[in-house]
Image 1 (tube, rainbow, N blue to C red):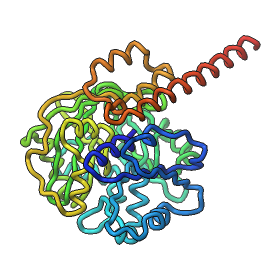
Image 2: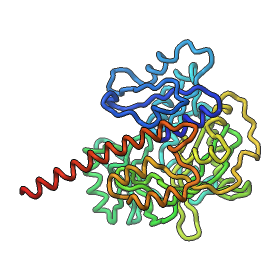
Image 3: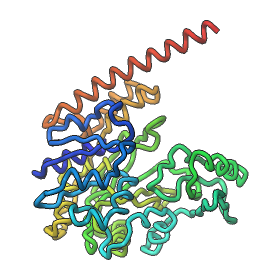
Image 4: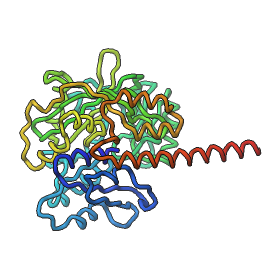
Length: 389
């Protein structure tokens, strides 16, 4: 979904768009909705098992271009891969970076970033690195339980092992499991039972920031889309908003040049910093539809053309709906059809539905029906087997 939302924003600004879908054994994958976006000129499947690295693929595919293409790295792992090859790719491409030429990957250490956020004046939840070295995890003293455990570095996908640990014994048991399925350092965070999550998305040129809005996540996905928003509300944010000012202070102190989004949670009257992501967020499409095109500003920044001005702010609330996550939740019986119809009535902006670009929605409908019939067949097969037993 993030590829579709980014392609539409970039295409609407008048730029040509290529999409590179990165994965393993991509020939076996069904086409996604973004494949049908009218703004996409070329669509490539990059197979990570194909014997060539992504930087090599980029250098070969785009050699000889007069102007440097802009790379939108829409996931933490791809950002890490591009950042690791920044000295080589920097001669041929434009992409997010640090003003002093340092490593973006170092900012993907959750504990390090939390310390930077705290120094910038943001409130943070407590956290403790659980380091993996020499094939062993080291659980530090002082962890407060219950805690929530995730990967220490955001460029390694830790979703399969993320969980709440109520005791040190629970955490020790998890580390034993992780030796086999996730041999990377972990991060234990103070567990906050928050019902309200918010986000801030913007772009920084290394000196100034544009933060046009804040987002409240109203309804989250479950099952395979756990933690991804189905329904959200984008709200105006004032120039004097304290969190906005501290976010700008953080990004400027890092010397970051690029798009960012930050996750927050609320506990009581306080708002706590959770994580900085060095990339675009899907809800940025709602901000684009409300009048501020963050991807276009990012391109201007990398080309040295943008001087930030106060008018890069949205002026009214809007509600968005992520139809792709909602559809998946319906198939998995996490969301009823009636609830989905109610959500559509609430939404001002839909991520897939578009009069200007209708084919992605048509594809989503077809895919939904196919997956629904497949799931129905599997359920009927299980019922027959259970009856026979």
